[in-house]
Amino acid sequence: MSTINWQEEAEKRREDFKRDLFAILSIPSVRDDSKATEDAPFGPDVKKALDFALELAEKDGFAIKEVGNVAGHAEFGQGEELVAALGHVDVVPVGDDWSHDPFDPILKDGKVFARGSADDKGPAMAAYYAMKIIKELELPLSRRVRMIYGSDEESGMSCVERYFETEEQPTMGFVPDAEFPIIHAEKGISELDISFKDGEKDGNADFRLISFESGARYNMVPDHAKAVLEDVKDVAQLTKQFDAYKKETKLAGELVESGNQVTVSLIGKAAHAMEPNNGINAGLHLVAFLGKFTLTGAANDFVMFGKDYLYGDSRAMKLGIRYEDDESGELTMNVGVIRYSVSEGGRYGLNFRYPVTANMDKLKLKMETVVNEYSGQYTHYDDSKPLFVPKDHKLIKVLQEVYTSQTGEEATLLAIGGGTYARHMETGVAFGALFPGREDTMHQKDEFAYFDDLVKTIGIYAEALYKLAK
Image: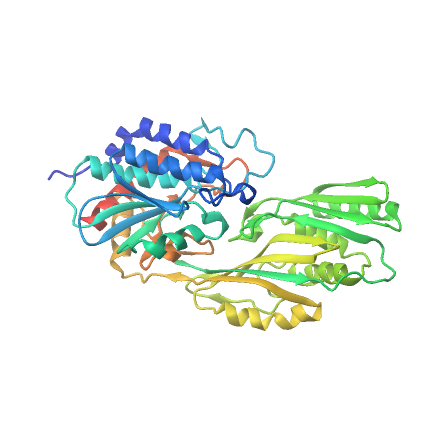
């Protein structure tokens, strides 16, 4: 058999790839529990994106299967063993201040602008087209090849948990949902809610905190925050200090008085939770501002805990659980959800990314003493264990060979704080699709991916799947 020019094969399909990519990017597949049904557990738009991916594969001649209305796959080939790529069709909420409609994709200056272009519809479609190349070239294989789609990656990955309850584990595979070259270690990911519910108390407070709202997801740095105050003793002084705080932090925001209430809001910068320092947490900044004043009861516990132990500390040093190892780096902490109401009390939704040698159960126990000091309690805990594939594994060797051959660059091994579907595979790693040196716009406004990079990725994925399956 003559040598296959994988990049040439990818280029042949450039226009078809663009058509199908733009079609799936046009679907606003943000999870919406308010519209959930039995047939669409994460909302109709997420289900529409999953249906689109599977229907496209069926049209192209693949055997497809939908699983529980939350996941599915497209497959071809023969053999007892299975090689797979796992992508997702859901996207994070849009946020504000986009330069154009995030679900009306455009190609400008070589970049595809749309929510999901980089995370993960663009890379997932590249992986699908890679599989399509192998099928269309009718290459001999000893293993089946499968493209698996999930639809809840951004909100907990329950989709792949459900999928693997009934479907077989791949012999090996990769996830096109991170960066090149190869991510062989993923930190553990924990969600932890700390709540403050001891109610209001009488006292000499500067104001009464009625509500506080910031953040929508554990895995995002919140870029907006709003607090409603009542019975403010000195609105003029509050306004003066707020203006000074905005100047000090260089943040935008406003203070609006209406009757007996004052609404205070701040604007920060969104970012992925894997590195909170890439964003500006509007919620914690607003908590820190409120912490300058005297409060009582649960409001005081809630605000002062956030100010004393969460604000300005993405490494959880103040909580006493700082951790680092050579395999995967530092523990990070993102405060992704912040809520308070008079009836429910306060809550911080924390997202920890911890090193592969750490034990989050023990770290959680270690910081409980501090939580108790502020009358706080744990009300939610979910833990996804770390991923680690040794550097001498066959999967690693094949992906290194392919990446180096097609790019001319060394295929170094990386460790990340992000979580991908790879952690739900018995043997899997994250492999692309963000090339070294490219700006990471995942979870940010005006998200984009370089179109030529995506086409290049098709060729890399095609050779990788072929060599793993042949």
